[in-house]
Amino acid sequence: MRYCGCTFYEALELPTDVFLLCDKNMYIEDLQKTPEGRKYLADCERMAKTEPDTEALKQKGLTYRSVKE
Image (tube, rainbow, N blue to C red; front, top):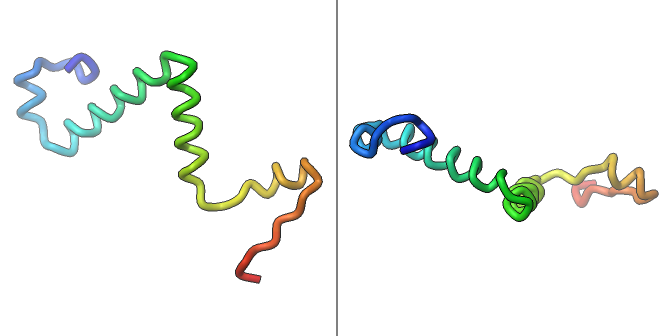
Protein backbone atom coordinates (compact mmCIF):
# COMPACT_ATOMS: atom_id res chain seq x y z
CA MET A 1 0.00 0.00 0.00
CA ARG A 2 1.48 3.26 -1.08
CA TYR A 3 0.01 5.30 1.77
CA CYS A 4 1.54 3.41 4.70
CA GLY A 5 4.78 2.64 2.89
CA CYS A 6 4.55 -1.14 3.03
CA THR A 7 4.19 -3.84 0.44
CA PHE A 8 0.90 -5.56 -0.32
CA TYR A 9 1.92 -8.62 1.69
CA GLU A 10 3.06 -6.49 4.65
CA ALA A 11 -0.28 -4.68 4.55
CA LEU A 12 -2.08 -8.01 4.81
CA GLU A 13 -0.20 -8.69 8.04
CA LEU A 14 -1.32 -5.42 9.66
CA PRO A 15 -4.03 -5.54 12.33
CA THR A 16 -7.44 -4.93 10.77
CA ASP A 17 -8.02 -1.58 12.44
CA VAL A 18 -4.62 -0.24 11.32
CA PHE A 19 -5.20 -1.46 7.76
CA LEU A 20 -8.64 0.18 7.63
CA LEU A 21 -7.25 3.43 9.06
CA CYS A 22 -4.56 3.51 6.37
CA ASP A 23 -7.18 2.78 3.71
CA LYS A 24 -9.46 5.56 5.00
CA ASN A 25 -6.61 8.09 5.16
CA MET A 26 -5.50 7.20 1.64
CA TYR A 27 -9.07 7.66 0.35
CA ILE A 28 -9.39 11.06 2.03
CA GLU A 29 -5.99 12.15 0.72
CA ASP A 30 -7.03 11.20 -2.82
CA LEU A 31 -10.27 13.17 -2.47
CA GLN A 32 -8.39 16.27 -1.30
CA LYS A 33 -6.51 16.41 -4.61
CA THR A 34 -9.51 17.54 -6.70
CA PRO A 35 -12.03 20.36 -6.31
CA GLU A 36 -14.90 17.86 -6.56
CA GLY A 37 -13.32 15.70 -3.86
CA ARG A 38 -12.83 18.68 -1.54
CA LYS A 39 -16.48 19.66 -2.07
CA TYR A 40 -17.55 16.09 -1.28
CA LEU A 41 -15.51 16.10 1.95
CA ALA A 42 -16.93 19.49 2.97
CA ASP A 43 -20.46 18.20 2.33
CA CYS A 44 -19.76 15.10 4.40
CA GLU A 45 -18.49 17.20 7.28
CA ARG A 46 -21.51 19.51 7.05
CA MET A 47 -23.98 16.62 7.03
CA ALA A 48 -22.29 14.94 10.00
CA LYS A 49 -22.93 17.94 12.27
CA THR A 50 -25.79 17.58 14.70
CA GLU A 51 -25.79 21.09 16.17
CA PRO A 52 -26.80 24.22 14.22
CA ASP A 53 -24.27 26.93 13.46
CA THR A 54 -25.90 29.65 15.53
CA GLU A 55 -23.20 32.21 14.70
CA ALA A 56 -23.89 31.86 10.97
CA LEU A 57 -27.61 32.26 11.65
CA LYS A 58 -26.98 35.45 13.65
CA GLN A 59 -24.87 36.87 10.83
CA LYS A 60 -27.80 36.37 8.46
CA GLY A 61 -30.19 38.03 10.90
CA LEU A 62 -31.96 34.81 11.82
CA THR A 63 -32.63 33.39 15.25
CA TYR A 64 -32.47 29.80 16.39
CA ARG A 65 -35.00 28.37 18.79
CA SER A 66 -34.39 24.87 20.09
CA VAL A 67 -37.23 22.39 19.85
CA LYS A 68 -36.36 21.35 23.41
CA GLU A 69 -37.37 24.77 24.78
